[in-house]
Image 1 (tube, rainbow, N blue to C red):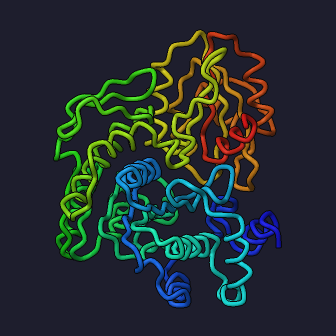
Image 2 (image 1 turned 180 degrees about the vertical axis):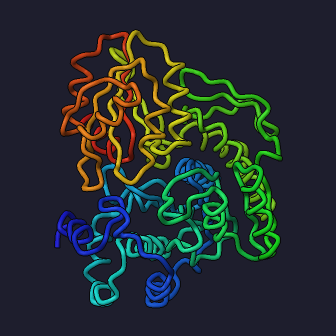
Length: 428
């Protein structure tokens, strides 16, 4: 098979959550453990960091990978979903897994995994673990796919666990209260392995404290450490003054990044306590050039600087959209244009209620089966006072926004990872 044929085979033969949703979700670790045994536990051949959370886990994972890479370590990075190319999920020192490796992995092992009927995520996770072992990485940053306790990645024994935050998402699998969701994500907390919590208060914090105490894990709440003294948003991102790093420039410019930065800085201190050598220069470079070093995309990403300015962001749930809505209101423009599409298993009504009413909307749908019909989205949005037009593809919606906008306007593209993915292909 060619690379394209191999990826198409993976999509067609295995259930893919990002395309079809809940029907692809497989609860439990049986398949992961079976695959792990077959491949002789490749993740045990290098150190790992496990990153969970409702929002921010992708940015946190990429920042840590960039910093460790700049510190001289050979770093694997496993994240999901991808935006444009399947290979974005699996990187070593920022370089995507080769097409040849993907093809050879599937051809060599499909005789074993086909009768097992793994999910797309289970198999690609094991591909990543094996690739990192073959590449002889020093450490790999592993992002949880969904939840924590029963997520496929929860077979690793990391040197550090991180839970960024808890908010409402994937409630059909994780529970309909923040405490239940926290309980699922707390499932990555393991005996004697330090865990860092980015944001948590009240009963959610109590869930983490009780879990850590029960299993015997040291726990640190990043907010309690007060590592950031000040944060100033600039034209090129954030400028932080922190306890250990003065004038720290952060390339990621979304409002949510201040919280992620505190979590990452806390993680760096913990890794240094464990004996990792992380010079200050590595931290400065990692924060300043994370996109270049790791290939991160879709986090308040500027697609066009001016005439008009165009930005995309993958935030798609209530917590993520709160930050985006605040940021949109504080941007400078004559008219705001919003290209918006969502998937059908999110809390659509609550997300729409957060968005600014003083804008022209271009309702659309991404090129996946889970995408909500653009006319349905338009009707729901109108009930919240959001007015605009509907377009059957992201490409058409983006083009319409560009046609309507003048040079002093602002175009935002978002609502789901998949709208951003389609938009990135338009701009490429």
